[in-house]
Amino acid sequence: QVQLVESGGGLVQAGGSLRLSCSASGTIRSINRVGWYRQAPGNERELVARILTGRINYADSVKGRFTISRDNAKNTLYLQMNSLKPEDTAVYYCNFEILSDSYSWGDYWGQGTQVTVSS
Image (cartoon, rainbow, N blue to C red):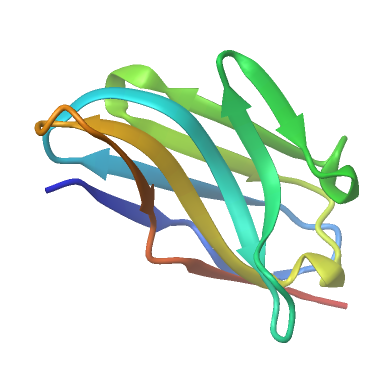
């Protein structure tokens, strides 16, 4: 059973920084695509940043402020968020594409962590 556990959200003032982490556990044979998404109240879930086959993509709204990285040895994904703005307020979700013990690829999501940026 694969599980993703997120940490690092919280309340921060505009201009501040937060670092999110997402660790995958269970029987993991391989990890392909990884990414961060967010969902603000009343909005659809949107891509924040993603790593796929070594390429990194960012949403235009976070370019130059957020940095996605991964530690393959620890099966952990990070999102460093700097110069935070009130419009970054949302629940943030990590997403992994994982080859599990059944030798099938699956799409897994973290439980979500709240990020609130005050003005």
